Image 1: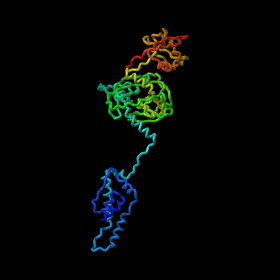
Image 2: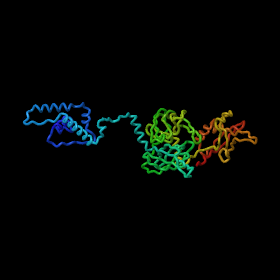
Image 3: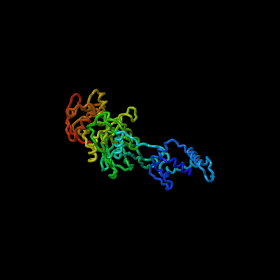
Image 4: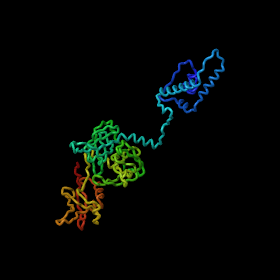
Length: 439
C-alpha cells in the first residue's frame, strides 16, 4: 500500500498514470509511444517532492485511527529504501519500454532554425552534389626490383556530369599524363574512364564513363555573359581528397586573363572569385545562386604559396563551345599561323615591339606564305627573323595579342600579317590552317 501511495503521489499529474489512482480496481495499462510523454519531461523538470515527509505524515495520520489488532510497523530505513527502489524501477521501466536513450530522455531538443539564405545554400548543395565527381589520375610505374608495372595515383581533381551519355567535364591538367583514369560518383561507386578529347590551350577536357543513366545527373548549364561583380558564387569539389566540399564567395572580378599551364596560351574572360579553390577543386563547377553552372574552377593565384589567394574559373560560355566540339569530333579545331616565337621579354631587351618569329616550318601556313625565321649565318652571328607588328590591321605587341586575334578567326580565313623585316615593313597574306592533332 505504501509503494502504491508513493507511485500515485509522484505520477498523479501525468495523464498516462492518472487512471491508476482514479480506478484502483481496474487493471493498470500503460500507453506507449516512440517518444517520451511531454508530461514526463515536465515532471523531471519540477523540483523534487518531499515524498518521505509525505509518507511519514500519512503513516502518522493512520496511527491516530483506532485499530482492532496491533500490527507491526516496518522500520523507517527499510521503508525508505523500498520506496526509492520502487521509484527507480518505475522510471527505468518507462524509459526502457519507450525505446528512448537514457541520456537523451533528460535533454529537451528544439528544431534547428536556419535563415533563408542558409536554407538556400543547403538546398543548392544537396541538389548539385550528385552532379560532381571525384577523378583519380593513375600513372604506370615499373618496380625496379620485380619489373612489374604498377598503377600509382599521381594526382586527383574534380569534374561534373555533362549529359546522360556519361560525358564528364574537367580541367586538362587534372588528366594530363594519366595512363588510366577512375571516376567516383556521389554514391561512392567507381568507374574506369576514357578520354574523349581535350583542349590544352583552354585547359578543358572531356572524359566518359560507362555508368547507368539513373546514376548520372547532368549539371544545369547557365550563361556567363551577364555576370556581375559582387554576386554570390559557390564552388563544389574534392579539395585534398575530401569528399564533396562546398566553399562560398563572390565574383571579385571579370574579364581576367590567365595563361594555360600546358601551352602558355592566354585564356580570356576568366572569372575571378574569392571562393576558396584548393588543390583538388580543379575541374569542379562554379555555380551561381540559382544552382546553374557559370564556370570551371581551374587555378588560384597566391603569392604566399598557400591556397588562400584569388581563384579563377573558365567561363561557361567558353567551355560550352569547346565541349561540343570535343564530344562531336574528339578535338577542337582552332586556327594557327604555324610559327614559334620568342618570349616577350627577349623582344623588349632588343628594344623592339611585336612578335619575333623564331621558326616557321615550310609545311605550316606562315612558312608557305614566306615568313622568315631567326637563324645564324656562317660565322655564328644571329640574324633576326620577321617581327609581326599587326594582323588584319590590329596592333600586335606580345604573344597574347597574337593569340587573342587568332581566337577570333576560323580555319581557312586569309589574314594580312604585317612584319618588320630588317629596316622595312611588309604585308604578307597568310591562310590559316587547323592545329595538328595531338596525342
